[in-house]
Length: 71
Image 1: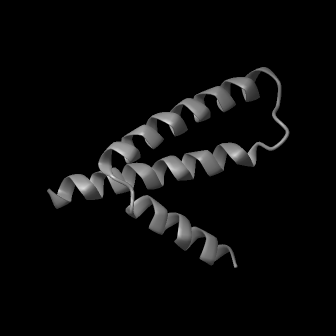
Image 2: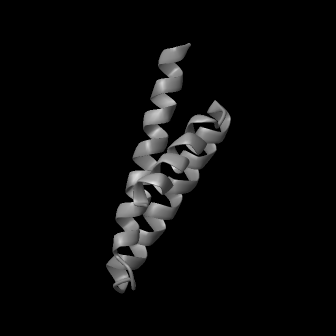
């Protein structure tokens, strides 16, 4: 069942425009920085959330690169 969720998320990323991908990269980067900072000060309740954001950011950057190579 987890694969279905991942594939739908992957399809969502692929259907985004280049500007949307850039905006989401900026948002995810900011969220990750904030989460890492708050985790350094006081441990957050779910540290696995950092991994989730990091993976989301990697998917977005991969999609950005794929779009650059298509040009």
